[in-house]
Image 1 (tube, rainbow, N blue to C red):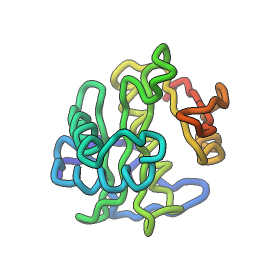
Image 2: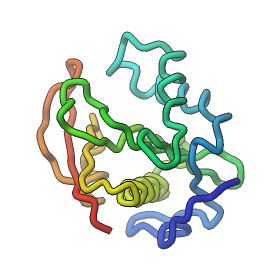
Image 3: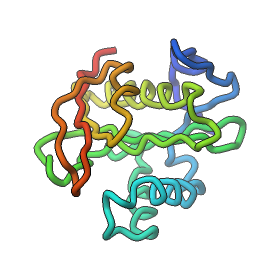
Amino acid sequence: MKILNLVGLRNARSPFFYISERMDIAYLADHKEVIPILAQWFYKEWAYLHPDRTLADVEQLIGERTNTNKIPVALVAFDNRELLGTVCLKVHDMDTRLKLSPWLAGLYISAPWRRQGIGATLVSAIEKKAHELGIEKLYLHTPESETFYSRLGWQVKERPQYHGYPVCLMQKNIVL
């Protein structure tokens, strides 16, 4: 398994959670076999925001995130060989805010592994990757995780409706 150089993040402890010492973070590019699982997770979680997308569409979109040195890029977390979660950087994530770019998107942690610091670790890892790519500011939108991201230093930009649902649009300057 090819592991990212995440100095200061691997085996990190969040102020709120414990993270397994066995957790590894890798590029999705090195683990394309998990794309169908990620597609199922995403489709189940967020299909309501894009009712015109099929599961096959979602799988194809995730497959586009298999870069390592340019956007779109995705990271995946494993405990031994068990897939725990994912996060990515993409050019756009809201078709109503095309002037804002790039975006942290697709943070998803498998249900049994939630509330253990994995999400915070993945966010830190993708922020580090953004910094390596020369990105100075990131955006994200979330229907229900504003408090989580606020704890990680994200700031509310606005609270728009997106495809008929209220979301919180957030931003963060990337300074490591």
